[in-house]
Image 1 (tube, rainbow, N blue to C red):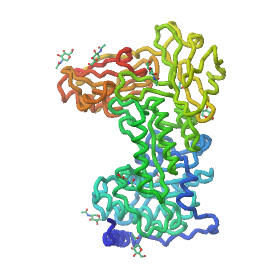
Image 2 (image 1 turned 90 degrees about the vertical axis):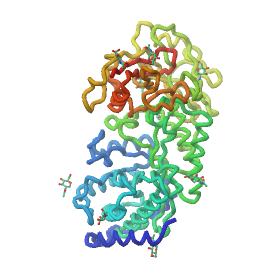
Image 3 (image 1 turned 90 degrees about the horizontal axis):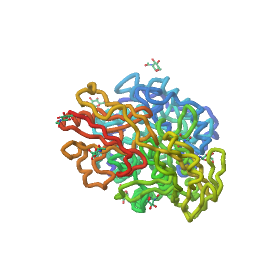
Image 4 (image 1 turned 60 degrees about the vertical axis):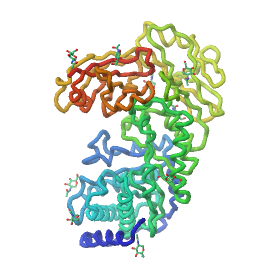
Length: 572
Ligand SMILES: *[C@@H]1O[C@H](CO)[C@@H](O)[C@H](O)[C@H]1NC(C)=O
Ligand SMILES: *[C@@H]1O[C@H](CO)[C@@H](O)[C@H](O)[C@H]1NC(C)=O
Ligand SMILES: *[C@@H]1O[C@H](CO)[C@@H](O)[C@H](O)[C@H]1NC(C)=O
Ligand SMILES: *[C@@H]1O[C@H](CO)[C@@H](O)[C@H](O)[C@H]1NC(C)=O
Ligand SMILES: *[C@@H]1O[C@H](CO)[C@@H](O)[C@H](O)[C@H]1NC(C)=O
Ligand SMILES: *[C@@H]1O[C@H](CO)[C@@H](O)[C@H](O)[C@H]1NC(C)=O
Ligand SMILES: *[C@@H]1O[C@H](CO)[C@@H](O)[C@H](O)[C@H]1NC(C)=O
Ligand SMILES: *[C@@H]1O[C@H](CO)[C@@H](O)[C@H](O)[C@H]1NC(C)=O
Ligand SMILES: *[C@@H]1O[C@H](CO)[C@@H](O)[C@H](O)[C@H]1NC(C)=O
């Protein structure tokens, strides 16, 4: 599959093009003891679990351009305190070249920043992996130029990092595109050029751990991957995991996850990775199911199964964090500490007890033991939350600093936790406003604690319930002010035209009730603390359809019959 002739052409082109620009290979001044060569397996084991400094040095055009400030030492302290052992530092070089073909000289200030951030992490004892992130977007474009640029870039990055410790690993390209055998062959040439650039850059780079991947870094890309023939570097295989797509990305109303079939599908995916790489260590370089768009109990089950399964196969897992979905870098607060705790315990192979929730995709309502929901105006009654104990027993329930009393505040009935009416009536009442009232931390005989949020809800109110698509300013999204009454979160949005047909993804009519006609988070809708959003693309789709369209925003708890939704009609 990997043709030596074409590889040689790639090398020749790169070597010829960059000959004038290549300074001598780096010689490290340190005593060689500083770099203790380690195998890829040792690196993978020591780097698990890891965390991604996402949307940071990979932001375009530069660090600080997106939602995060420049990476601060305190951020690394927070992730280390949570138990992470490694940091993946994605870096985009695209806007930092000071010359083009053939030299592709990278701004030395930027290379110094990358070097400093790597040192910031290793000085704290964190393992590091860094890459070129948003740089190779078209594998099918001018291959000569891509090869030339990749080789020249890695020669410079390699020289910059040549004398770093063996805790620092390198990854050629994030999620390189490609879906054909030819794309795969092109990528394998780039992998070889990356290794050649490291060898040519000197220092300790020929012995440095690297990861290599197939196109996209997804499971399907594995079939186009071939191992490098002459690698001197110890190497691991890297893949990314965001599956199933619809659950992970808030698509088509898929808010339910955790059936035996769901878990089996994930186990099969990981089995493919392991089956192809029985003798090669594996890094899951990115995975996440964001709390922004995933229901909590489903997310916790997903995290537990991802981390537990990958750990059992010896993979290292790196949580993706774009700065909005996991760690609040300003405060050091994890937006979903339960998921982090589940990760840490599952990484140790400890059994976690998990909040149960609806798993049947055909269900017409969704319940979740991450919450006690009480609707404003209803009588307060005791509520039973089922848990998946996984062999553990309930230990304590803490509400703030108060330890709840078994018997009077709650009862345990098998794997169910019963919140007594006597407790709930002190928290919920017809006269009190809706909102999140308390968080209870449930601990078990082992494994992560689980949070139960006590929420009194009512249907949110909107600033308006209809509008004309033509009145939305050109190029703008439609923002609708919202007053939240329970969780500050949209579960799903059904988008139906006045003729009954669905505005987008009409095929969703064949999906179960909770998914029919639902759009996708980010594509047609989103929300924040102050408003819900109908995206420009959705407004344009309404205009193009020429048909008045109703957007039904659904909230948690999700049920067709409970009235926890708001209709917004967009007229043409
Ligand atoms: C390199 O980057 C620094 C910092 O952004 C900038 O001030 C400088 O002008 C750049 N150098 C070149 C040659 O573009
Ligand atoms: C492809 O890239 C090489 C190297 O940068 C360049 O010399 C050549 O002109 C490019 N070919 C085309 C068709 O653009
Ligand atoms: C492998 O090594 C041989 C001999 O050193 C060399 O000719 C060839 O170009 C190398 N191939 C790759 C893919 O590095
Ligand atoms: C290798 O991965 C592919 C998916 O790309 C999968 O179809 C195949 O079954 C895997 N092989 C083994 C031995 O697991
Ligand atoms: C996670 O575990 C830590 C340490 O045990 C604990 O302080 C924290 O409260 C836990 N968070 C949750 C949400 O359970
Ligand atoms: C969901 O609610 C139904 C009906 O109230 C109940 O029978 C079921 O046990 C609940 N399941 C979970 C996982 O909470
Ligand atoms: C409970 O925790 C969630 C985060 O998981 C938070 O948004 C909410 O404000 C907390 N509720 C209370 C009453 O502190
Ligand atoms: C909300 O919109 C849906 C879909 O168009 C419709 O079936 C339902 O009757 C509407 N509900 C209300 C209260 O208007
Ligand atoms: C859309 O709704 C408006 C307001 O109810 C109505 O006047 C108009 O006739 C409707 N347009 C179509 C194409 O149904």
